Length: 217
Image (tube, rainbow, N blue to C red; front, side):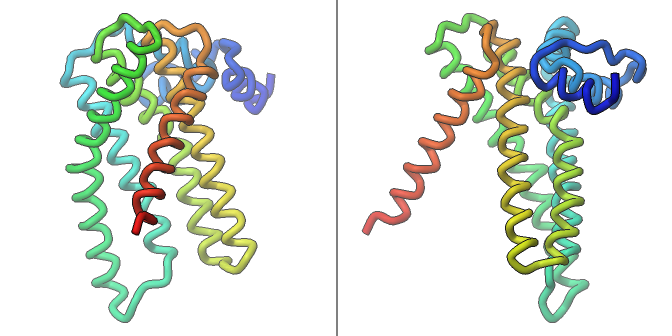
């Protein structure tokens, strides 16, 4: 079976044995694409402490920081390029490594209580584990999207903007798919697709409320 077929099968919920990639943290991330729910189950079986979950979150946030750099370097800078790059890196690092973790804990807490409303019985730790492991699994997609975005920023024009918008949509779908599968497994739901759908509805509703609030006179 080709690697493309393996990833497609894992993406569609069919469990694929990808143990040939070896063991360790980074191979486990790649292995997860062969079976998202089984990767979450393995993580839950390890039962890491809060320090382990925090390490996952720090890794994911650092990848988000790295994923911003290609776009920063590709974007047209103002009169002082060196200062602009330095200021952008420092600001982004501060925001991602200090404020984003707090936001992620809040999102995990909210996902726990929403899951409880749908009948989940597992604890808040499982919701945090699902979100933080999902963020780690998302890291290859984030880096890939960042590299492609830097290319099409340089191309510019209608084509460049169209591809950038398409990449954002694809990344959003990937986030929904990965987080939905991880949360479904950690909370004991049968259908990860329904969980992904609920996540989409919640965030779409929040975005609508924010937009309406911004337009309110």
